[in-house]
Amino acid sequence: MTDKTLFEPYELGNITLANRVVMAPLTRNRAGAGFVPGGLAVEYYTQRASAGLIVSEATQISQQGQGYQDTPGIYTQAQIDGWRKVTNAVHARGGRIFLQLWHVGRVSHINLQPNGQAPVAPSPIRALTKTFVNNGFVDVSEPRALELDEIPGIIEDFRRAAANAIAAGFDGVEIHGANGYLLDQFLKDGANTRTDAYGGSVENRARLTLEVTTAVAKEIGANRTGIRISPVSPANGVFASDPQAQFDYIVEKLDELGIAYIHVVEGATGGPRDVSPFDFEALRRKFRNTYVANNGYDLELAKSRLAEGKADLFAFGRPFIANPDLVERLTAGAPLANFEQATLYGGGAAGYTDYPAIAASSRP
Image 1 (tube, helix red, strand yellow):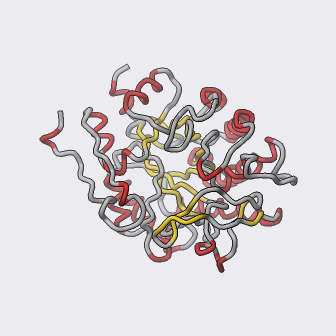
Image 2: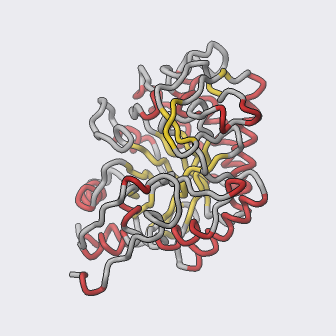
């Protein structure tokens, strides 16, 4: 095993990635009027185009799907046009980019919802978390339960958003089924107490995620469809009493759909990897296509997991914020810069596009 293996090309679906390093989705709250990504977003993603694959920041499929201020959408023509400038620039640098499709469910605030309505969720259970509104963090609003006849509309929003993503030039999409957002809320019984076809059993709680994935894959092709899951992460106040059974089942079904990849948060999102007992290798065995490993990876851990065959691609999140040339730094064994916490969410170029690439004189 040599360092170079991580940096060799990889075939993902019908596209070739330059390396096995994935830029994980990172919410930065810098969309412009109409929730359109602007010129700063073009620069930001272009700076990071050396990643084998960029997964964009989470992007709402509808206004109802929005949970934080100034996050981009993919449901208007202006948003499609804005994203097209990003994808054109990334492709011009030889990069590959997927759009992450997002519906936050109950992790929202009435100030962000159409006509000030309550956010939607599988069940009327308020999340124990905060959201970013009016340039500050506030408690999320009380949600209402989705009616059964509203669910087809959610599926259609995901399908349309996937079609819009391809129209905007993305190489594919990643369905956000993790971190306590809508699909994860349906998957986990701590947030889903429904007694209809979308609640109760492992199979019923998986129904919406599988219906969404099926619709997206049918629209744009399974080889351009991925999904992110977080079996044991307590992010945004979700929990499951039976995570192994739930996620063994859903990964078996995702495998049958033949989608390009599963992107798995191993442990607590942004936190400890051993937050709860779970056999992630079982998911790897159940899924024949690409396994993207996420959470707390550095170069050494990625190298060892790759050598052991435990994952195919490795997602790096926050290291990409202050290191636009992260792949180059990892390849060279160069030190990594640290990001500024104060500029993570919202604002302009500061802490977004002004992190420098490594100076030639400092390379080993």
